[in-house]
Picture 1 (cartoon, rainbow over the protein chains, first blue to last red):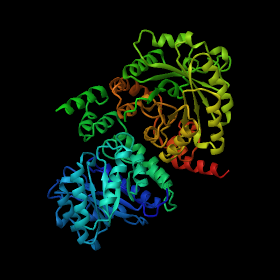
Picture 2 (tube, chains in turn red, brown):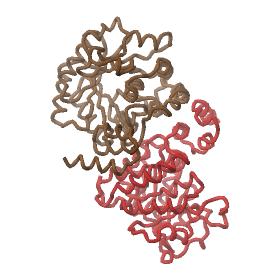
Picture 3 (cartoon, rainbow over the protein chains, first blue to last red):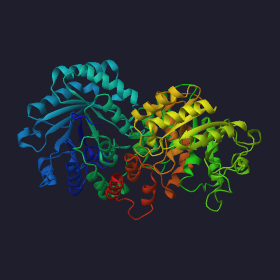
Length: 316
Length: 316
């Protein structure tokens, strides 16, 4: 698939940080940046930008805050055409945490939101745009969104702000390809002046397949993470995505190399990927938090009991 | 997705046997049979039927031969409506190895073939049909088949034998959803009196997604294996497939239970699933044998070198 407008964003450090409370070492982040830069990927999301007045630096690593000096230290001296992105959560960042873009190493700010918070998301995106950044709005948990609310939210975004793209975020890994097609068509119809993005989760081994489906359906902003690292079942594996895209600007080899060197050892220490409890929460269209809690207990591989407990919750 | 005509076949023991030379213990096979039967899956493929005059019983476990007494011992006393299938390879079985169906516990014989061997496959399928079995023809390595040869082969099958179904077999895990749609439409157009089947491999994490795509495109025979076990990257995970199909005759719970009890311990001993060397052979549309060989060496996680070696082969 070659379409020049396709923009690939790597969110290895940002979504991966949800597994280890954002405590990646500088060395690791630098190796990711080198690999992503060498592979020709358009953007790298290096973490969240949160306020230290709201979240405690005692509880989270530095990639939850992405202070300018920390980013500079990690990327210093690396040759790169890859732009940098940070994600912001509504209510976790103050205006003062966002420098004017001309004074920052960050190029793009992505606003994560639920449908119900779209007013706040638009405000935050407009703040970022006003400071000179590119911006996107990423609609999380979209598999739970009611059609009417989603239509209104998209219409409001289209009218009230000039983000580059609005993302379909399958937070629960619950969507099938036909859902992607339905949502992509809806987004394209309402968002006449914006690109559509897709961010998958791999609970049912569909993150990559759904990303391809999104591309077929006209999504031009696509997310991936190296070796699929990310919360719970993880994300669309960047290595598969780059293997699929035929734009000669991409090079798979630096990604394969960094997987061997950094991700195989890391996977021994922290867990992500296809595991049955995550598949089950995906099937039930639920947040993986119950499954993540289960994986920390001695019952981590008791799948039938976990399934029954999810079924019982459904009846409520 | 509820479509009554959808027929699900579990090939856990058959395709899984390609990892361990078919040396599964009776206990394991019996547990699979109990779980598959309790889950309401239509068929279980219990192994290959090969001739002991052609292949040596010193080199393969009993599920390479599937003698009637061995099957009987494994399934004896288990309540089941699941039919049994065995796979036959061209040139590895004699007529005498196939009892009349009325004297056998096997219900269906699936003939594995390359496009070029379709004449022999039709002969073998007709032999099975003549002895009273249901039969299918499974066209392996279809991602390498030339269109004209495939058209001719399908036309010949349609004219010369009465198999229930003809399978699209993505042996190399190289197909994308658009390829599945193309092939399924071709198969349906030529095979007017037969069902179309699909058997995926998970090299690029697409086995399940492609199986869903096949179902959307009218494939009514679908293969899966429990926990995705199977040669190299494995197959479409049965647990995901059953989670997707909405026919109330299926029950996911016995499959979840047997994964906890049998597959988690087994995965510690033998390896299958998404691993980068298999993803790479899938991208190159090649048999995974070079990747399987690599995984037995100390270079098993040197992905860049492996990719470069595959690239060099491509130039030849």
